[in-house]
Image (cartoon, rainbow, N blue to C red):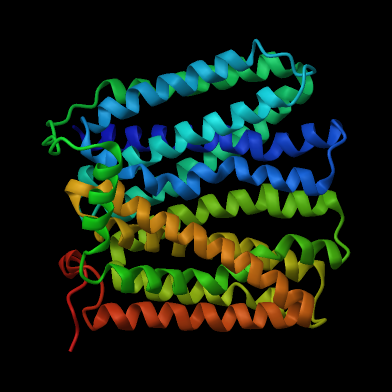
Length: 406
């Protein structure tokens, strides 16, 4: 497969994940509010996105059966058909079908993500993974922007049917690069029941030397930053920014900044290598919380908050690319989907815990304390990860890209 085809294939697959996610996370709350649901009930719809947190449960099946093309092609076709079926739905007939559709899309795209991540680990050499993860982050963000921007606009202007048909057409285009994918077959696992196969798969992966420590280290790397990011929206609101201004700063400017960060992170990881990318992008991500801390302490104003938001998205995007690249390095090719999924789900759990902790801290001590604490934890987590890898901790595969230092 040519390099251009590899980039196009990965971009299409990650865009296909972000497209429905962007639409439903932007449009669903509006639809539910129009139907008279309470904010508490709307918040509870986050349970519909559980497949993304639980996908590690079935990842060994995706890794152990068939080629990744055998998974990706049917999943992409199923997503396209599901979007087309939405065009036939009556938006005023109730909410049950809508909840079922959101859950179905999340199940399909979460499973597709397992196969896509495993494919990326095997398609990309160590030097290409920085650029590959830039494409991953950037394409997913573009999908979210199209789903939450273009599709939401179509829904508002032309109605549900037109929106669903355009979504189906866009998803259909992402199938085309998959048609040219050719892979060698993978060994079939020994016959076993579904329960035994999953248990055996996870027992093998969890026993890998250095894996538990590595999960803890990447969790520390993201903990402080995730704490600060979790309360930026409420902080903007409580600082007196209008909803329109918040939407402009966090939505439009933030999305553009995140795209720029993904591109810059990919370029820097490619040129500077793993250690420099993780260390300096991680410290820059830490520093991006400083404008929020100053604004919360009464220094500056809305302009400083907006600058902080842009910096957070640019520098956070760079650090995310560096971290995702390292996670690919730690994944064994034969079990790449399972390994990467485990690490990604661990980060989801860390971010959820960080959000809860952020709320408790901000409620008890205010936003200034939260952002200062997040800044400190982010810096410590970055240094802890780099120092641990310097000493040779983590999965053995990392020695290929991160030789231990004396």
